[in-house]
Length: 185
Image (cartoon, rainbow, N blue to C red; front, side):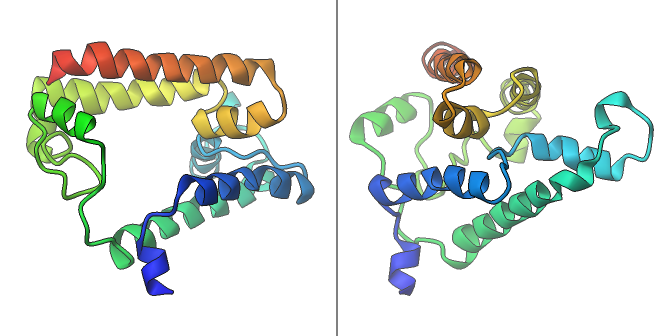
C-alpha cells in the first residue's frame, strides 16, 4: 500500500479522480470547485474592516477553506511523508531544454536553480517569482477564477467564459515558456 502511495499515479487514474470532484461538489450542495476564491474568503474572515469586496457572508463558503486546508495537508503528506525517493521523470527533450536555461538538478519537484532565496534577490528572480506571482494572482481574480475553477468546473458546466479563460491560460503558458523564460534565464 505504501508503495502505491509513493509512486506517481498515471493520468488515467488521477485525471478522473479530479474530474469526479465536479459532480460530487454539485451533489453536495451546488458547490463550485476552485482554489483562488479561497484567498478572498480567507481575507474576509481575517480582515475585520468594511471593504465592499470582503463584506459578504464568507461563512457560507467555509467549506472551501476546509477544502484548501485539506489540499495543503495532502500536499505536505505527499511531498514530505510519502515522498518518492526517485528523481522526477521528465522527457529527454525537456531535460535538454531546461539544461539550456542552466537547470541541471532534477532531484526535486521544482528546479532549485530557479526557486531559491538567492535567486529571489536577483532582478530576474524577482521578476519571475514576485512580479509573476502578483500577475497570476491578479489574473485569477480578474478572470473570476483560476485554472482549476475554469478548466475543471467551468468547462464541465459548458460556460463560455471558462472556455475563453482556459484558452488564455494555455496561450499565456506557451508565451511564458517559449518567449519570456528564455529571456529571464
